[in-house]
Amino acid sequence: MKRQIKKSVKRQACAFILAAAILAGGHAASPALAATQPPDPSAVNSLPALDSVADQTGLLVRDPLTILGLNYQELLELQPGGQLQYSTGIAGKILSQVQFTERWFAMEKPVLAEYAVSGDKTQRIQQITLHFPKETNREELMQQITRALNEPTLQETSQPGDSSDYSAGWIKGGVVYNLKDTGGFMEMSILPALFQEAEKYNLPENTYILQQALEDVTGDGQKERVTLLGKRFDDTAMYMEHLYLLAEDPAKAEEQGILIKLPEESDGGYGAEMQLLDFNGDKVKDLFVTANTGGSGGYYNHHIYSLKDGQERILYQPAEENQLNITGSLQDHYQAVLFIKETKQSYTINLQDRKDLYQELNVYKGGKLLEKVEVWHGGYNSLAPVDVNQDGIFELAGVQTIKGTSNADSIAQATSLWRFNGRQWDLLQAEVSKRE
Figure 1 (tube, rainbow, N blue to C red):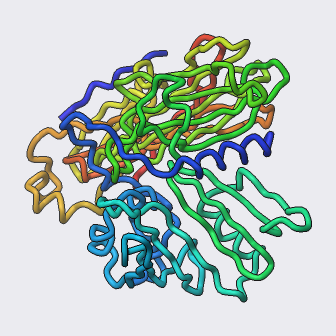
Figure 2: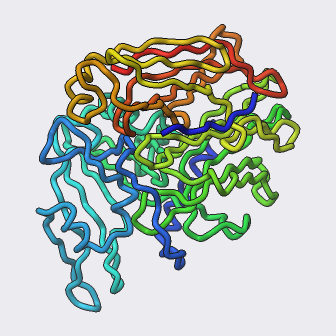
Figure 3: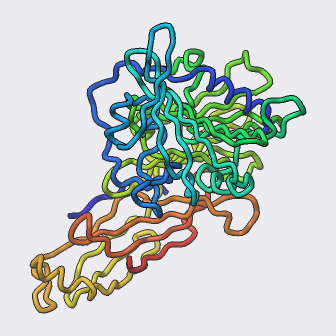
């Protein structure tokens, strides 16, 4: 099968205030959604915070975002062994939390994790609180957390008399994490990072903050609060049905910011992330967004926007994506000949290591190709910003996987390097190599 590939040549305080607002908002139920299904997430490689109790070396595939909002019985089905804790009030004895002993952030020692249960009939998980052992070293803990969540949005050492001697906060993937060290104990609260200004921007209620940064992206010399937002498919999904970018002046909360709605045909995905880098050389950071499409091919969608002078300009989007156009086919003697149209270079790939498999599939017999097999490829498996010449202007390094007899038969990979010239992306170099 052959696929035709479409081608065309920190202010810190403000961030803390926003995080506090998220905490105050708590969890809200999502409105009814269309009866459609998100893409299969099985191909997504994520780095969640919670370690598997059964496998002490691996990370649990469940992300906290998929736990928050679950009914406690659903939680126990996913994570058996929790201890139910009750409290007594006016209404009598009620379930208040489910406790687990778990490993988080790849720590050697487990922690006490309390999953707070709502007091209404839904009995949903509202918050997760981690209680770290007294002997935990804060510096080492911060290093472990940062490996999973990146650098904190906030770090503060409190004044005498405050309830916390030290605090740090993170927002990642629709979840807000707040670490508190009183000197006597350390604990972390984990809540949904619901976007509290959804109504102001006419966005759905179930819109979450996926990432946030302070950076001048308009070129006015003042840092904007830049936020990557996602409309969640439902209350338990990691899949974001729609993605948005928002740039606001943190000193003018009453004013409307600049909202970008990514093209609907390419804006959904898993594990969406944002980077602020200069791609066009105007010395103003551009907004680079990437998200896994969730299909079996491991493809990603990428978008780049410029907001210089407050004007939205698309520098890169899937509808006009630059890719290598690679053709070729399997040949006798267990090899493939591939050709890059853009560079007019051909490559021969040795497939002797697939000899037994190909013979079982009746593709070859005694080194003779039994039927014509054309190679094919899809979109980018990776498109990463790289500053090749260290001039502060970033290029894009792409990786495309070339398939042989089936989607599972990855025989080679093509790498390419692209630079934006102000109007379009120019190909700087490209090559094909065997996929090991």
